[in-house]
Image (spheres, rainbow, N blue to C red):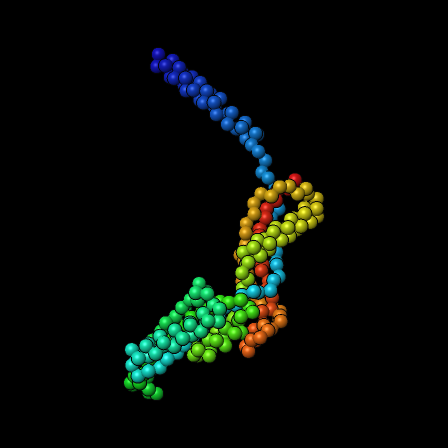
Length: 236
């Protein structure tokens, strides 16, 4: 009786295992219906637009020395105000003027054992059209500026120029992808992804005509606005 019972239990286990296997089998069959992986080509594209800058910016510094910190700072405030007023008179709008740094430092004697005075400094930046750049420098120096840094050249329509460079970069990527696909015996398909690269900072690389009528000559030269993209295309 015990032997018969064992046989019956074993038969039931085998039947249950067969049922589970039968249910699981369709999962293996579903792999045949999986979509094939899309083949792709990834290329980088470069675009560039050359332009002549139409704006220039400078930093002007005013230094003042006095026996006490209070006196140095007061003298520097007056001197900086005079430079700012001169810049405004030269045609710089208030929105194009910005204080860059205000500092006050003690000055020591030769052996560093005593403070003999103080130096206060104020730096203001100003941006203007290229045609007024030379006159701007002269006006600031005449008003008391003791330091000049610049120019930094820019374009007032820099964003639209960068958009043009991006379009050129995408077109360049398309040309590269077409060449690669043809060389590999493939057919170029639709764009899958586009990733924008970094815009390079404009750098003057060629001399231009000096600004007329300015005692301080300013050469705007020309700039290259660059863009890069990475584009992935489907191929077949």
